[in-house]
Each structure stands twice: as C-alpha cells, then as structure tokens.
Image (cartoon, rainbow, N blue to C red):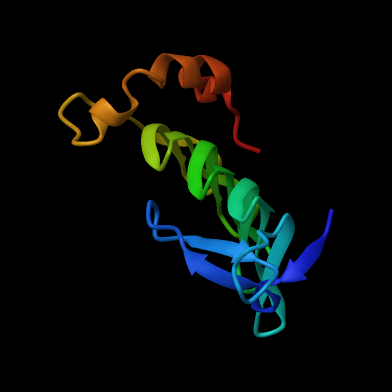
Length: 150
C-alpha cells in the first residue's frame, strides 16, 4: 500500500464532514488511495488509511513520545465502528461503538485497567434518531461489553 506524508497531497473539504478529501493532483481530479502519515517535531503523530480520497480504514494518533493515543475505524471521513483511546502506559482509556461519528456505547477505564464508567446513547440525545436503526447491528458486531483492558 502506498504511503505518503500529509504535506505531499492536495486537499479539498468534504462538505458533509468538514474533513479533508485527499488527491494526488492539484486539479483535484485523482483521489488518493493508500496511507497518509504526519510528523510533529520529528515524531510520528498521525497515520490513517485513505480510499478514493476519503479516510476509510484505520486511523491512529500518537502522543509526542510515540505511544498510541487513539485508534479509530473510519468510513468515508467519519468514525464508524470501534474507537479506542489509550493512556501513555498503553492501557485502554476508553472503547466505544460509533456510527458515523455518533458514540452509541462507551466504556471508560482508569490507568490500572478497571472500568470506571459505561455510557449508552439515550433516546433524548439529539443524534439518537440518526443511528437508531443501526444500533442493534453495531452492538452485535462489536460487542465492546466483552472487551478487556490490556
């Protein structure tokens, strides 16, 4: 899979998400396919997969000291699937089931790996109606309640 630095690509704005759409040409006609990475102060800070110009696949963000900070499944410039946050020590901080940027279920852990809180989207949430038809499918597919902290 092709890998390029963020600065080597041309971008346009996705009107649906506000995120970048990536192209290999300045006329914005040829969408990029591959992996995009970016460095901050000499350290890898971000990498993600792109398909047809859109973030689609795995996205990872790193602390300035190199440890994994976030890992998200993405689809067409939205977080869609499982989203994970990590403490610098490598332990899981949170894991969530997400449908097109709407967090439906989340489990939060302390630095020792113990569960400190669980949250579920409620019918009173303004985004509930956007995801209600897919919640059962995603909960069955991802089953984060069975997830164990490292």
